[in-house]
Length: 112
Length: 116
Image 1 (cartoon, rainbow over the protein chains, first blue to last red):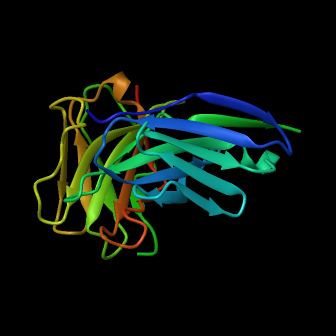
Image 2: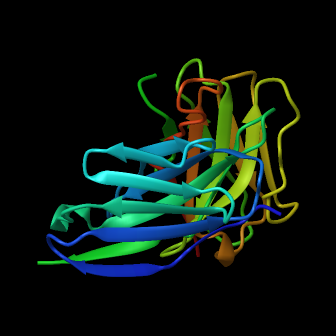
């Protein structure tokens, strides 16, 4: 089946690193994504990783993919109060189409 | 257009009435999605259109929900005989399948539906 799971909450202190974890079930995932939703705003793409990669770094963001365990993580270095938001993990399934399934989202609270 | 456009942005309707929500995807995007987000919840997949292929309707919660898309343009999500549990934000998104970065999805601002 198609399922993406995330922990619901994460609280960190400003300046620390945040690690948000995600597990997925569909082994045919082609791309995996992290989206960010700020309060009262729409979802925006943060970063993505192709399924044949195991790591991608983009400034303060590091994405790690363990395809064997179907585990994806997002690390935010030097977390700032402006990083407080909901972070959604998502997977695109299949090669003929790109049906995209989202997790329930992880609410990140950053304490000053 | 420059982004995904949805209308209405807010809709309050009485229980039992039908509602139509409209989505204009980004021009040239072949894939179009509808998701539902209840207050404080994650995104629930509803339906997915890709080009001329048959839509993937596996996420529609009941036969009161239906969606259509005209070619590769506008889509309408219709909810018949609305119930209070239909209250949510209905998010439309589109993507250009096959681009670098896979299936990057661009979301609209959503249509906030309240059933009273």
